[in-house]
Amino acid sequence: MAFPTFKSLPALLLGAACLAGTPAGAADTPPDKPTGLSGATDAIGLVELSPHNLPGAVGDYDLRARSIVVAPGGGIPDHSHAGRPGIARVTRGTLIEYRGNAQRTLQVGDVWFENADTMHWFRNPSSTEAAELWVVDVVLRKK
Image (cartoon, rainbow, N blue to C red; front, side):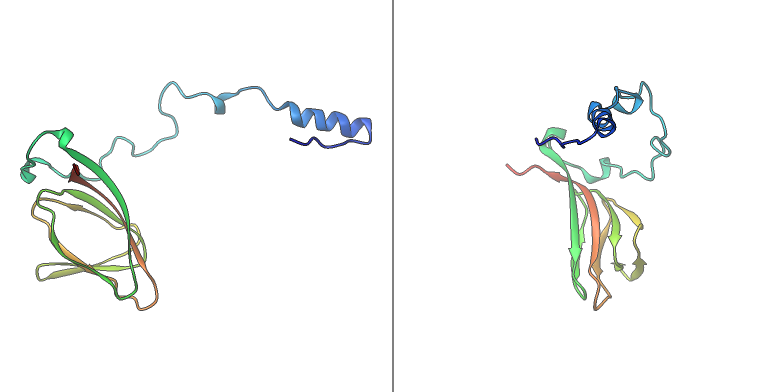
């Protein structure tokens, strides 16, 4: 690491003060209890796992997080969430979700829960902007 060269005593003293740093303060130690949080204990929603009839033990499964980008005009085919519960959120763009004969438009910030009875598909209606989902689901561990 190269140190700056100072040509005067005031500059030297200022430089030394900057290099000395500051002692450890409150920002450098973990708090004793949660501070500055809101909503940390309030569930936005829950996906009950028992209807999924997941075989085996908890250790047979992973909690997977993915970012899925849907290109302009692209789509996600019809699929079921029986045995694969999840929670998803739109993080960019717009998607149209289809469940049976119903459809709804999802925008950035929209969240939904994928339960055992969820069967749906999506399309990105934009011809210019990609859409993105952040999805967390429970999946059988690959062996």
